[in-house]
Length: 80
Image 1 (tube, rainbow, N blue to C red):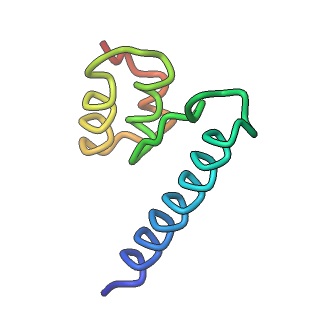
Image 2: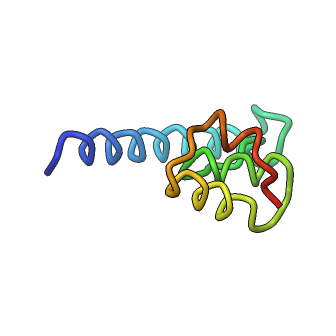
């Protein structure tokens, strides 16, 4: 397995562990929020879409990145 793949799988495993700890704490009433306040996303494009609630925006950001645009260019591009 490639180093990057191991890195990503380790991050995912640790995230799942932490989310389970948080869920157990919520079930015991140790956290006032009933669910996690953070949407888990797989990349920056998905995160932006989740933050501003515009369906399809993540796909458009990925499309612009695949076309060779930098994050700065994507951020200033007319995305819609």
